[in-house]
Length: 111
Length: 302
Image 1 (cartoon, rainbow over the protein chains, first blue to last red):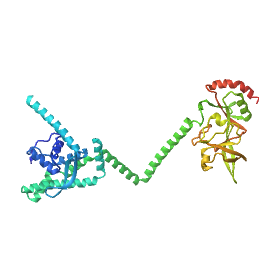
Image 2 (image 1 turned 90 degrees about the vertical axis):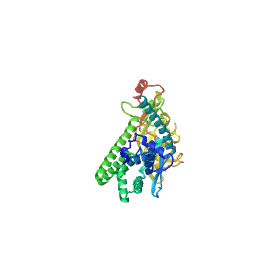
Image 3 (image 1 turned 180 degrees about the vertical axis):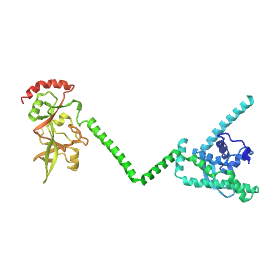
Image 4 (image 1 turned 135 degrees about the vertical axis):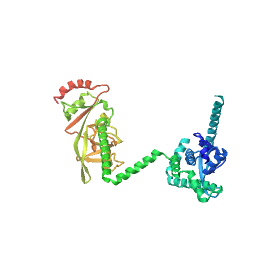
């Protein structure tokens, strides 16, 4: 499986990835995993077991809303979408993440 | 506020737990099915594809547990289940429940009673103006004085007023063809003025009145049926007509202390009185005592 070779996610980045993935429109759980995997060119694999707890924690926080709909192959599926609250959180976390990565890179290059 | 939204979301979860479980199961099934579809497209047989999708997903039970815990307020649910357990245990053992309820009731009741009595006995004040300057007089340790002694002390002008009160005399009230036995308090005509007792309705008994009565709230309520025109009504007490001039407030407290409530106050000279006196402004008990001394020498001759 790809997950064996994929690096582990940094703590806290799962929220950021989900928020970013949903910023382009509502998706169901399986599509979120797939989108992240494709966008990272197989570099990131979200564990199925940790996806749903994370999605539900985000529902509790009010960053996401969910509703039932029909999937591309005509099955009943639950779709998640960003709330205005979630969009704000995405901006905040994305900014913080950029700063963190840049700082780490700086250290890696100079030290 | 974000925190309140979150608490609201969690609370709403409590009321739709079973729906949540159903929906989560459905969502898992969809996820696994979607993966199986994909594997099938890649060339696997339907049964193999489903088996592999299931294996990849791992334990739905564990995942469900973790997902649920995102919503839960552990302590609240624990508390609820503890309460349910306690209720079941008590229902199964009614004798034990009865004993527990009984001992709680007795404990609370006893404490409430003690508190009420202590408050009433230790901290309550009689219904009067400036209780600090009101004193009780006793002669040779005897709290009862004769009418003659009362008149002598009143005329001596040592105090700003001396009053007499006797609350131990029953009164016979003749009402139409029936007679009632009332707890009457006999007072001197200056009693209300000197002591300064507030009335709720009408006016207090005034100096010089010999046939006036002031009734208590309880008497007015129960015996006169809360008559709004009670003022001016005649009462035949001990075969003598009296006029009601006032009604006392509900929280009226007598000078003698707690626990005793008469039906009415009336002006009448009984055989004996308990004496109270109003000290002139600024006079201490000591000063009053020394002024009383020479008067008392004469009092002995009364």
